[in-house]
Image (cartoon, rainbow, N blue to C red; front, side):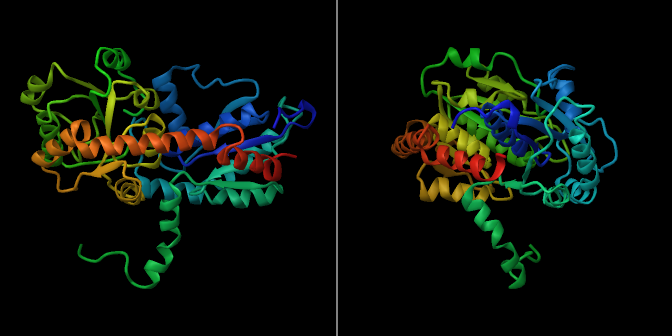
Length: 378
């Protein structure tokens, strides 16, 4: 499909759920649509917009003439904190308070007498932002709900209502954008497939005991590692590792608070990935051809973990009751063992399939073309 003529250029408003794992894939989709000729307005919450400007610089979100950023409030009290917000509070607040600001924004964008932009012709919103459906109905434009979890995770969500109706749930009694310089340069000094990459995502929280057990298991695995470790990783405390750990691993470890993960996972020195099994991280690991150790925490991460470990054979699971000797064995198996070699073979096969699906003529490419032609394009 070629570029769209300027005279009939469609204008899509993209609005992700305001967390990193939702913003990143929406931004990729927005870039693809822009490449196809769409005028794009990308909508962040004011809170996340300020965080991005603080970390990336005051001009980092200026955008282009035909790809620009706008904001709406999330309805929560103002805050200058630089951490991911409380998810339950954020979800309730934005679902109650997001409709009117988004309506006002689209009305402003449609006022072509004061804006040199085409009128809004469609909305793509996160599946968690269902209030956008009412906005789309008000303006008489299509709204595509973009779900960022895996298809198996999404299928699980669709069964939640049935689990509640059957009384099976709920169970009873029972620095995001700041990059550490030198990550790639450090990896360049390492042998191919020799480094373990560790990143538990932007909102995972673990206990101090879990941190210590995992850290010593990683250290005792005797492999080089790059660990992206946030200050707020540990519940109620800072993620501070003991001096003995730093001393033991100083010649083969690098700790950072952020990195360009896609670039890291495609680096030839990376031989394995310790992940929380968020879907973005899982996809990026597959695209990099990197097998995984999976330590899931919530949402559909457990489902992704099961598929990675059981169905696809590209991962092994770290039990939540983490113990250093188990972590050590898993790290060694991941990097040197027969199971690790089999996982590497399997993930390379999936990588090849993903590349085939996304190139021109592939199934994913065709689906994108169909979405544009049948739903989004005028």
